[in-house]
Length: 114
Length: 112
Image 1: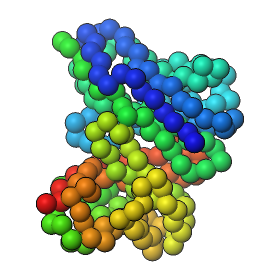
Image 2: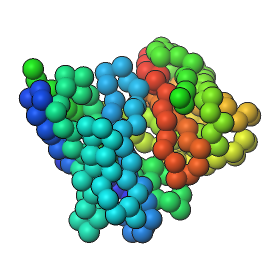
Image 3: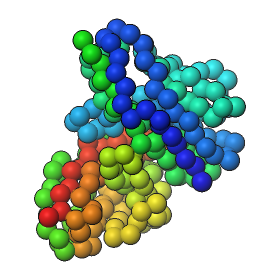
């Protein structure tokens, strides 16, 4: 069974600084995708970034990058130049390619301080 | 842009009532999903559907059923609501099974 672990229930970062949100996963599947979502207080889940297990380069989307270390089964999200609007819950998720089942971590609440 | 809508943002129901949560997507996605979200537990999959009239149980299907009569619409049904079903319910859709899931705004359900 797949399991996603986010060990940081809450994180604080100063505005304009970078922050890393941790995510580790456990799977026996060889082909899978890793996802990060942002959930502001409004409740909607916003897709941020995707990394495939066979992608050789780390994914980047604007200020978001994914530090993918396959051997360690970690997929940390790095947010550069934090903004006040980045304050939200962040969820790491994984889906094996052979099924429809996407697993989510418990989430990390990020607070950006002015 | 993908748009996933849910019929209600907030609902208050009484124990024993039958509750319908509706989800509609406008991108012709094949796959649709229902999750519930509880603090500290992340999102847990209730049911998903990969085609019209097709459904599969997720991790926590007990007390729920679903209906997908049309491709764009996926309904979650609480047959007899209970207080432990008070939660945030999120609907999502994706084109293929490898593809990104796009979420609706969520429905906060309170069962009294």
